[in-house]
Amino acid sequence: MADHVNVIGAGLAGSEAAYQLARFGIKVNLYEMKPVKRSEAHHSDDFGELVCSNSLKAEALENATGLLKEEMCRLGSLIMMAADASKIPAGGALAVDRNEFSHFITEKIKSNSLITIIPGEVTDIPTDEITIIATGPLTDGELYDNIFKLLGDTDLHFFDAAAPIVTYESIDMSKAFKASRYGKGSDDYINCPMNREEYLRFYTELINAERADVKGFDKEVVFEGCMPIEVMASRGEDTMRFGPLKPVGLTDPRTGKEPYACLQLRQDDRATSMYNLVGFQTRLKFTEQKRVFGLIPGLENAEYYRMGVMHRNTYINSPRHLNSDYSLRENPNVFFAGQITGVEGYIPSTSAGLMAAYFAANRFLGKTPEIVPDNKTVIGALASYISDENIVKFQPMNANFGILGALGVKFKGKTAKKDKAAALADRSLTIIEEWKKSLEKLISVSEE
Image 1 (cartoon, one colour):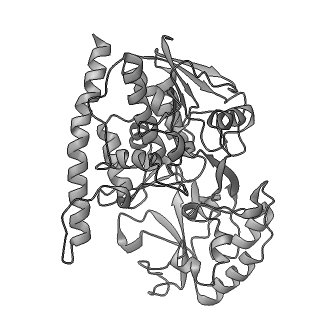
Image 2 (cartoon, one colour):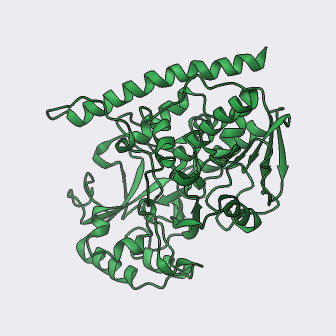
Image 3 (tube, helix red, strand yellow):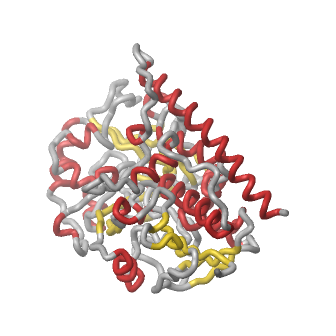
């Protein structure tokens, strides 16, 4: 057996996997195509780059993503350390300065003596060595072909999109105002309110705007959690007002009333020089983005740091091929991790990297895992979902309480939902603390 574990891809899952393997005293060969090659969605040569939003979603434990973050923090996640170091205001959500975030991850990986970084594109899969494939949803070329040849499968995919980012100084603050919805947190968001006439004009222009050609987009397979704003608008005049343009919980200080519709912009960097248009993923042509989004009060003269783009996201048919430890049923030396497995979102993708590293480490060291997290934790529930052979039509899954095992207790009254979430969190974190001890044993063995 080789004296190292291979990790292919230094995105969130790959970086997490490489870091965790090194914690267990295992040498890692980390393959990353940047800076030799970039995909159409990448802008930086750093590892763990956030190609879409800079938000890692809710922090509260009564939210499944918030609970997953806490699980990851307790397990010593590199990505959660990076998030903590680069955190910026975002109300009840965890948002980061994307450049600081990626730089933190890159420095931690590069400074680790057990991790050897091998730049350049990988085309072949070393199936005779323990290997974690974490190449992400933008996997293409020969590696893409070889993955699906290995699986004997046709590919699965959906289309994802990123929202534009504008400069703060170009936002007309005489028309916009700062506030968080329902007053949660400080005034972390910039809000662009619209009256009915302004909204309807924007809606009409948006649904008729010219869209960019995207290869393979003929069937318009879009992920519901990251839907292009123009696709959402085409579903009905008021659809956006119940989505990213909902005015609920906001008061326009100029009128003292709730707006008819309202766009929120979220801080994208620590210097507050850039703001992300929340929920405005799009495939409009660049010229159309400037024209149509310029109809929103406050954005008439907006300058764009980055335009919205759309790209194809590929994932494998995990229920057919993967075990709950993210290893390949046909070859337990090969693990998959991250969004290519069908988990959706930054933190779920990272959790797959941590899980795959733990089980790959046990295999490398010839040990039997003491604890196998199941659907009583969010991290385990995601692994159980993507490996469930009973799933016939597989679709990407984000963290949610619906995939967790039942508590066997019914909650009643006005606080039932909150009480249930608290009970799920208590059960989960008790198990995570036990798993943490198992992880620490592996680390202590490597230090002896």
